[in-house]
Image (cartoon, rainbow, N blue to C red):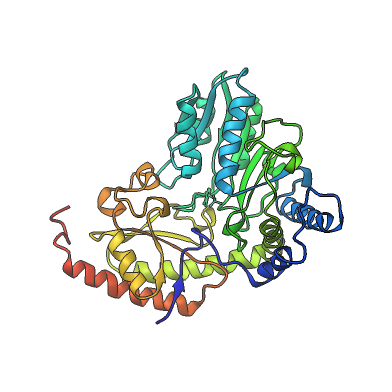
Length: 391
Ligand SMILES: *Cc1c(COP(=O)(O)O)cnc(C)c1O
């Protein structure tokens, strides 16, 4: 059976070069980077080299990069850290209704501890209106956290414009750039952002490593307390091999950015062209202008069928995709993102996210299209609710 992986937004395979860069750090170069003898210093060197590589991908200085255990930790840290450090200035945070749960659930936690949160609406393609953002700013607002690229529908926000508004009002600006990294050029100074969350496993690096970019001069407390690692900001003996892998993945992502973008985008467009012309009752979720969405993201709704059923049947043909949201799979109920862009329930239930990536081929697209046609046809035959009735 063929195996076709179409879920690059959930995670990516570790590239061969990345795995090779990591291996010595499990064995020969195993020293604790905090120690002062040879083997420790060698590990420390690998760590600092990775810091330069990650900084290089976003135009930051190495001292502005703090490694964490994942993108989720970076999101938690920045929200809780700013809420804590700026509590004298205010207690209000602005975010959006379509953030990743790493942001939304942290906001909900903070709301139980005296923080007020505004969740901005988005339009039918997932875009935040900068005027809405400006109107939501209060004298007590301390932070805005707006993701750069949405993980479900791929929407690329006008971060530069939003960050400029924040700056004009003296508010710190964070963007969760986990889905943007490696897919779009990012320059922290050009964008004018204060914090960025990143994750290695979405850019062909290992799982369990992330980073927070924190603009030099802004102070927030540490999130994990203990030793003096990461300049006393993130305690715990470093995941040296993982961090080295993240560095290598960042270096490759920078080198391959244009080629990667073009490849993922052309296959994604091919997939959409074929599905939209060969499968009846299929609609696109997210931006119609493909230049304003994640290059590999295609979120489509197949009316009158259940996403879960599509996913399972596709899996039986060796195809890996996700329903509307990876994080809500396993639980019924529509995704908070599709809700926020007002996708009617008849279509939200049959939403599938395909994401193409570096290892996707034209043959994969061909196989996916043919299989989807078969699977959707079969499900609609079985469904008691095709056509106008029922829904
Ligand atoms: C995957 C993802 C995260 C979480 O990153 P982890 O490293 O898996 O914790 C956060 N935000 C977005 C937008 C993501 O896609």
